[in-house]
Amino acid sequence: MSEYEHTCMIRGDGGRTLRAVLDRICNKWTLLIVATLDRGSLRFTDLHQQVPGISQRMLTLTLRNLERDGLVSRTVHAEVPPRVEYALTPTGKSLIPPALALAGWAIEHVSHMEASRAAYEART
Image (cartoon, rainbow, N blue to C red):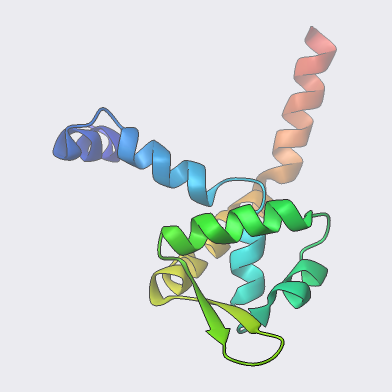
């Protein structure tokens, strides 16, 4: 039995929980935001500038979801104008090692995958 099957059996939900978590952390922006916040807390504008290509709306939505899931904390400082900072929670920080492992795997295997794609395209 695979780890996935074992996890689904324990949870008894047919894999819904695992898919929901993977949907959150494997979307287009989450890992970029988490990696950026790994360097320290940032204000929204600074985070927006450091995550290339993300719109303000998508950054807002992603941060809201990450906060809801307990990966990011949002701190509002009582100043005029209000200052809001985002930081990784301990759970968010625990995502860094597996994310780095996945990034390393991707870097190690990207040339093989590209060659396989080219061969597949040539056959079809």
